[in-house]
Image (cartoon, rainbow, N blue to C red; front, side, top):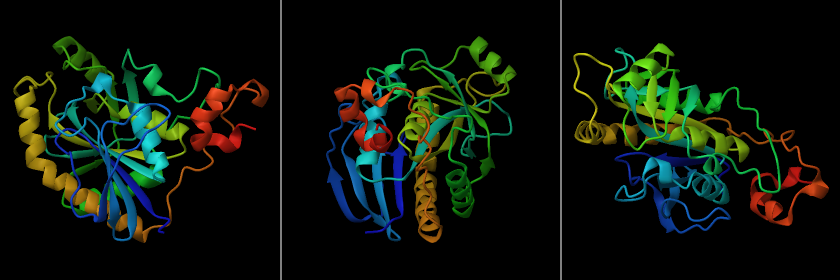
Length: 289
């Protein structure tokens, strides 16, 4: 079995992954409930892969309803050491145009109701993960190169503001976020990055720009029809990027975040509850004493 792995979480408009060999549909149960949908597994260029549509096939789960913990735990159960989240985003800069990609390297959190879905910890075990650099840089650089090889206009770095949703921004919010210097805005990827770090999974985001939010004076305000039109136009590009990403992973040394939680657990082993041990065993069992 290959030691190269790649999980893909597909965003708006990306509900399947073509080109996999030995393709199977796998229903996964986790200690945190069911993930968004069944996962599709297979291989590409010898890399073991797992694909999950973030919002479920048919796009039936809203951003604030997503089972983030179950989604990342399912990737861990399937042995994915690397996970890439593909996400539709709004641009907060005139030079980040619809149809282009941003390989973000920072996040700002403006979510409000996702406390439980933002961490595997609490309720019997406390841990504090290092998160100054929220994406795994070696994987981000591989994804950047793969995107450019696939023909995308791909920007190197940027800050992703994660908003609660499901409504888009007000004009005042959009102008405020621009004044903070953020580059793109979305509703999903920060929780995936947090949970991946806690699960010792290397994670990065490929942000697909679909619109200019509502700050731009000469562009139409964002609406669903505009987003869907750009997503559909660029779905083939996103798939081509995934193919190049798998090819690059197959030719690169293994990328792994193993060890990133080695000093994160604060709770004394004797005080960790049996239920917490059960929930966390696959993720960081070796650090629980």
